[in-house]
Image (cartoon, rainbow, N blue to C red; front, side):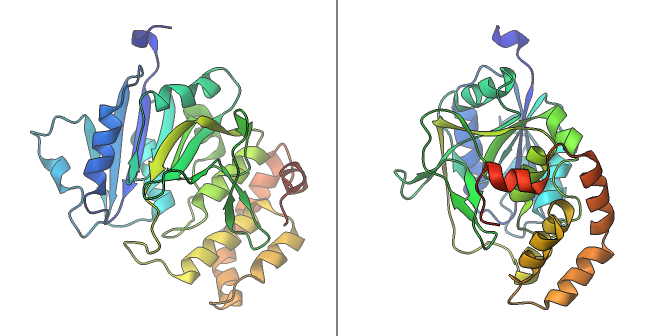
Length: 294
C-alpha cells in the first residue's frame, strides 16, 4: 500500500500544566518518520502555566490543532479530542513522551491486519530507559502492574493510557472513555475492560518503544475521592456484585458510602444495565483469561 493511500491518523494529546513537555513531545512526534498522514490535536485542559501558549503562534510550522477547555478532566478531554478528530485511527498520547522512527506504522500493522483492535507499545522511562513495561494487568487492590516482555505481540488486560492506538470504529462503538469520570484515574483501565468485554482485542507490541516521563506528583490537583469515584464507577459498570463489594472495601481515605452514593446518583446503574445487555463476555471471563486476582 502506498503512503498516499494510507488512512489519516489522529494523534490526540491531552495536556494540563505540562511546562516544556508539550513542545518537546510534539517535536519528537513530528521529527520521527511515518508513512501515515497525520493530524495532531492538543487538548489544553485548563492549564495555568501557559504550556500550550506557543501553539497560538501561527508562525510555528507544526500541523497541530489546539483545543482549550476550562478543565474537564482526563477522560472528557480525550473524548473531546476524539470528537474533533477525522482519522480512521486514533492514537492517545500523554504530553511527556519521546518516540522512535516508524513507531506508529508498526503499531498500526496489528490493527490493519485484523490481529488487534487497540495496541500499545513498550513503554520505558525517560530517566531509566532500560526499564520497560509491556502492557498492564490488575492487582488484588485494583491497581495497575506492568507486564514483563512477551516474545511477540500479545494480548494484554490493560492498555497503558500513556500511549496506545485504536481503530476509530472500535472506539466509537464502545462509547469512548467513560463520560462520567472525574479529573483523573482509571480511564485507561475502564476503556480496556470495556473493549475486552464488548469483544474487542487489546495487544502490546514489544518491538515498538516509546519513552515516558514518570512523575510521583501530578502537576494539578487529584484527590483520593476523585480516584475512588472513578474506580467504583468502573466496578458498577462492568463487574459482578461481589467484585463491587470488594472494590468498595478499598476506599480507605474517603467516605465509602458517600462515594457510592455519588456513583449511583450519577447514572452508574443505568450504564451497568446497558453494558451488561450488550457485552460479549462477562467479567468472570476477563478475570480467568488474564488471571486477575479480583
